[in-house]
Image 1 (cartoon, rainbow, N blue to C red):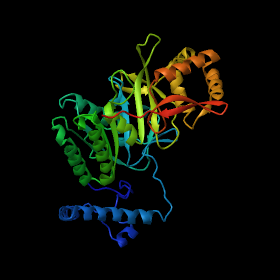
Image 2 (cartoon, helix red, strand yellow):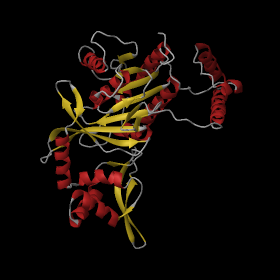
Image 3 (tube, rainbow, N blue to C red):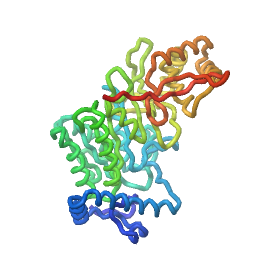
Length: 415
C-alpha cells in the first residue's frame, strides 16, 4: 500500500542499535530482517553484552534528545480541549457487564478510522488528531466469528462513514479466541507485526477483552508481564492501545490484579456504567468517568444514553442529566459525596472546615448531614481513585490545632 506524505506518521521509533552518526541524523529505525537476525545472533552469543549495547544505545539517543527542546505530540483523541488518549500510550475502558464499554471502544475506533472530518455528533464531542490518518487494528478475544464480531466490524465501518461492503485498507481485525492462552501474546504480536509491515500509518490498536490474553488475571506476575508486553508493543510498532477490561462483579474496580496493574500502567482510565435510581435499579442514564488522566486535570463525568435506532451511544438530554444530578445532590449519599471528594482533594489535603463549607453549599445540606456522610465515606470506603488511577480512601489527620481531610493510597494486597 502506497502512503502519501500526509499519511506518514512523524513518530521516531526507539533506537536500539544505532551509531553516533545515525543518532545525530535522527534516522528512522530500520526493523529489517537482517538487523533482527544479527541482534538475535548477538543475544545468543552474549546475552548480557547484547543487553548492555541496547541500554547504551538508548542512552545515546536520549542524550541527543535532551540537548534540544522537547515538543510533545498532540493527543490522538481529545474532548473540550483536554487530551484523552496520547500517542504511544496504553489506555483502558472498564465497566461492568452490560455497561456499553465495548460500544464506547468501538465508537472511539470509528472516530480514528473516520473519513468525515469535523464535529460529527455521533462521536460524543471526542475529536481525533487532525490532518493525520491512522490504521485501526482490532483484536477480539471473546465474540463468535459468525455473527457477533462481524456485526461489531460493520458498526465501526458504518460510523466511520464507509459502506457496508467497503473493506478499507486501514482497518484490520482478527480474533485470538481460538488460540491457546499460552500462545496469545505471540498471536497478538504476530498480527500487529504483519499489519506494521503493510502500512506506515500510526497503529491504533483495540483489544477487547484484554484479560483474555492471559491465563489468570489474579496472578500479579502474569498481569505485570501483560502490561510490560503491551508497553513494548507501543515502542516497537509505533502503536497506541485502547484496552477493554471487565470490572469485578458488584464493585467498581477493574478485574483482579490485571485491573490493578492496568490502573498503574495506563495513561488514561475511563469507567462507564449505568446510573441507579432511588430504588437501586439501573436507569437509562450512562455515566462516563475519567478515573485517570495523565494529560491534565480530570474533567467532570459525561452522561450518555443508548440509542436503539443507531445501536450506539448518544449524549444524554439536558433535562435527564439535570434531573439525575439534582436527585443525587438532594440525596447526598456517600457515593455521591465520594465522587465529589476525588476532585475536591485531588490537589492535596484541605481543612475539614473548607470541605464542610464546599459540600454544604453544593449539596444544599446541613453541616450535620455532611459530617455524617463523610463519616460513612471513611467507614464504608466506596471506590475512589486519585489522578494517577490508584485506589484511595478518605483519611483525616491533625496538624497542630487544625484538622484535615486527604486522599490516602490503599496498598493493594498481593498473594
